[in-house]
Length: 378
Ligand SMILES: *Cc1c(COP(=O)(O)O)cnc(C)c1O
Image (tube, rainbow, N blue to C red; front, side):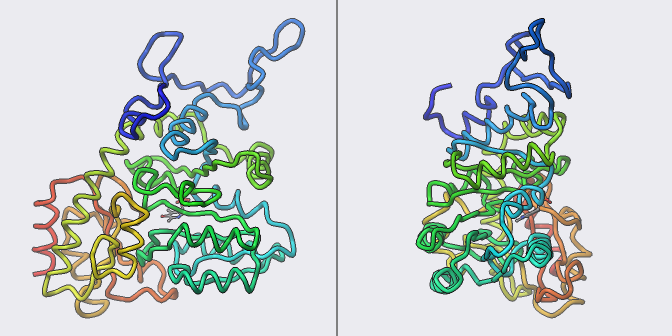
């Protein structure tokens, strides 16, 4: 394929993946776990020995993401958490890691446990405060800095370029969890990040039926990338070919889905922000959001995730959540169907306000989405 194609074109064509054998316009699923050698015992395909991690189907999915991220290399994992674990497993005893506070709880919990177990010093910092992040980098000289923007469920925005500068000034590696931004709305590698991570379970797959994670880089010869790659191969955190194939299929509509979800989210956020029963809305697309200016600079759209603080407390929030009909009460985000979550019920001890409702906006018609909130808030 031509090099400078737009994301919508790359995605629609699955980065040029067709089935050369049958001439089908869709790539096949190769399920073989093992690959043959010829009479002289040479591999018929030198890059295919055994499917941990030699898989053409996985490589095709990785290629689509590489193109969308404008990266040099991509690795898929069986979950977003496996991708994060793949990064952190490169740390050695005695190393220091700096992690943004108030991010996806599963990430924070696993990193805390891992660092304690492995004798890695962990510092947590409110990274949406660029000065605080810079000070923390200078004070602790971390090997690894991990941020998440926009963050889940606070929707805090981290200035990726400033974070990259602060990290590189102390020779660290910056990893950005850009799940809520998707590869369509933000390009962390172009902003200076070393590795971009996504839970592909969310918008990249977008149909709430595949669990996957992804890392991309534009520095594939960096020792950290080689270590992550070797660990995936040797330790076997690989995605199966069926899941990879579903991802290839789903990503054909990724730019289209993200466009509609973002459009819906902007309209819904404005509507909710103006509603008398709503105390506040956390969404980087709203001008009063503290991260609005940074988000405007580094993103081409504000994404489909927002959090709503309804007036009152736990009871009022649960009442609204209980009355919603189109917004399904379930965890996760980035799917074509809208979801709501009362985060405090899920993680009662992490400082989430009891009146916070996290919202993942889907691709439904905006009038139906607004009507649903109108009746739930009345
Ligand atoms: C869901 C999520 C993860 C974890 O991904 P899994 O695919 O569920 O393992 C990590 N970061 C963010 C921001 C997420 O939303």
